[in-house]
Image (tube, rainbow, N blue to C red):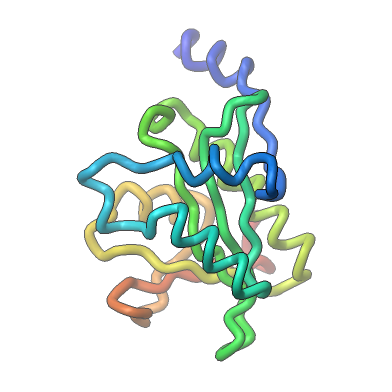
Length: 159
């Protein structure tokens, strides 16, 4: 426990926009092969946010090291706010980055949209992600989106 506490204290996490200076570093981040089915490749997501301005791409850094990626925005069909992508690079998983970065990303979304709810979807077999999201108050809605289970955070009842 002492060692993990020391490691967490050294993390200086920040979230910043993906731009012309850092997009290649973010595109190079990836999950492990056994997670490929759970999330789109960052290059695809970066292209999506470039051509669909309702989606915002952000980089997650520990000091100056890129360790993760997120994409959020408004689904134009439903006018719902979604956290559409969240990933920590395979080399940084299991070190507490997800647990530290996820609430930062949720706070950014809340400030950006002043929304009452945030939605996300998960691959039905991605148990680790579901547990993480549930630990921050997301609940399964019973709905499916493109084969993925929809989860929703009611901001008025959490954080």
